[in-house]
Length: 116
Image: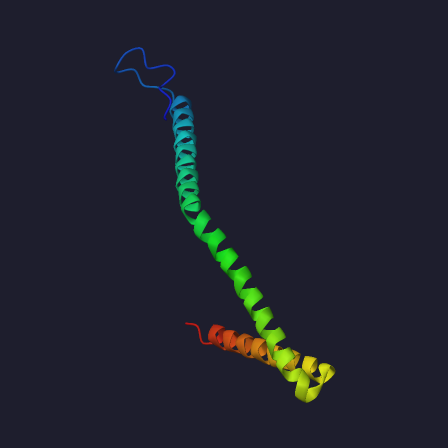
């Protein structure tokens, strides 16, 4: 809230010194800037609070997705053990996972390059 004027002029027609006017202008500007900053902080805080629970849920979903990908890689490995043996099955499962990761990374880079 803006501060009231410290010393009003003694008579309505008496001019105020320029220094007092500039000082009051600076003080009013500071008060306005701090009020705007407080408003922006309150607005950002309210927005952040509304995104807190969805962000936590998305983080948990990402952890479950990571677990599912791990289980899939283990399943690929276990299904390749009988025909290839443990060593080559592990190598092939890793190559498949790296190929998928490389393809996704390549696709992401191409999308970034063609972005307007």
